[in-house]
Length: 438
Image (cartoon, rainbow, N blue to C red):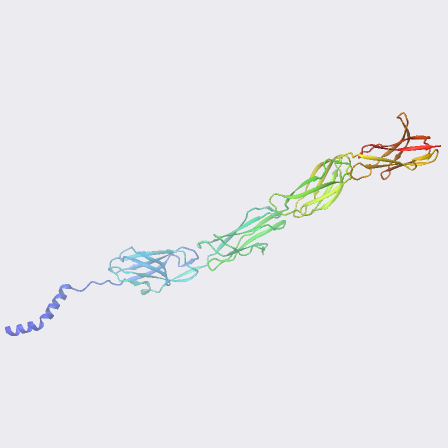
């Protein structure tokens, strides 16, 4: 080829030769390559509510083990947004994500890989469908415990139901608990809300008997209903105590004495006892003389008597109890002092003729209070020298002693009536002026 023709060809092809030269010198550009495999697995493919589940993402490269992070998703909801890959047997890397917050149902678990300098980003679903994770409602147990057992009538008893999941279920159940007596809901103790897995109710109206108490957990979408084992709650009659007092102690004979009784609960019960109280006087031989039986009103009872004999009287108040309240009693010493008396004497004729009958009358009454003294009255004529001439003795009837006589001598003198007293009344005297003429 002539020199001229070579120069012309070089001028025509020159730019293309220079470009090709550059391409050859630079060589092909390096690019990230796809993973060879990408799998997702679960340590508990079928889990219970609250159970801890760990998902694993296994990435397999073509040469070196993949590096960087992956993100786990439950559908479109992130579970772990930046889980680091850990190199396994080359060329494999693994990342994990642990959660216990999956709701009951079927979950589609997917993983995305961000890529690194060697491997390009990818999704687990590029290699296989989403992992199906099943979560079922957890079974539960309910345990019932009373604050006091046995208890007494009207004693407040707090019953506590504790609800817990059965493994492998976990977490803290929510919902409500209904407390039951012999399988029947207890009024005021239904749908008690759980707090930190426990529900309570205060029972204060259980009748005296043995009660089969249970607690029924209502359950939720995550936790299955459960029923506690029965607890036999023994309720007995409430203990009582009696306080006995009187309004006068000591009191005078025939004075009206009022005995006052208050019956209260001893121990943890809170009710006011009902029923009645019997009052007695205890004789020296320990037999009892009944005074009265009085029903309780507001836990109290009163009775009034004026028939107690003088001296020390042992008074007993017996609360007879009911099905709900136990029997109890109290005693006290009531002293009755002999009462004072007054004797008033009258004559049917202040001035009478000798040997004519006159009627002498002595009325004996208590000096205070009410009553009717008994015993005898002796009538005397008082002589001028101060001595007494006996006229006669008369038994008192209805508080009065009457004597008819026609043997009084002529003269003016004083007639005296002497009441000799009794176990209840002290002696007393009275007098009246009497004139007898011829």
